[in-house]
Image (tube, rainbow, N blue to C red):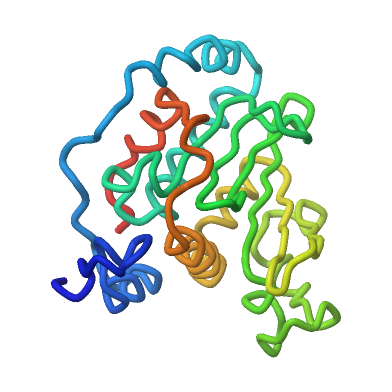
Length: 224
């Protein structure tokens, strides 16, 4: 741990060495998080109205359930790194009309959208984790694997945005989102992408962090 705390370290390397990060990514290591959270009361009150508006949406229960799973399983030491290395926005004003969005560094990690009275998710991952040969060849996307990650094949689709190793996976229906998060290979890929961007330095979206949503994300207990 002493090497991980050198002044030159950035991102999660201030708290976790590479062995600990890999162990968590592979589901072999349970990380010790902080017992308490640091909090900005000004920021908590700033987004209360948006959070209350979200609670009036028919998708609110499913949104909070999936956020709890995501916070529990996909973010390392979430209390210690809250807001400064990841954040969650409520009804963000950015294009797309997301209900909630999780960010790290300058990157969107995960978003939930209304889909009728239900929800659909967008997972941003590394393309190379979802190709049959781990290449950046768009033609090698493992469609069969993606379809096995959801309840119905029609529930999953994907796109390749600009970026060297970026892959967007869209999953419809709460049951399919739950299944996707429970597939070990998919969870590994989500964790790998999140580690990549949490290690890049401070979160650029910390001013839009919604503590009320984070309360639910951090109420899920340990991932293991």
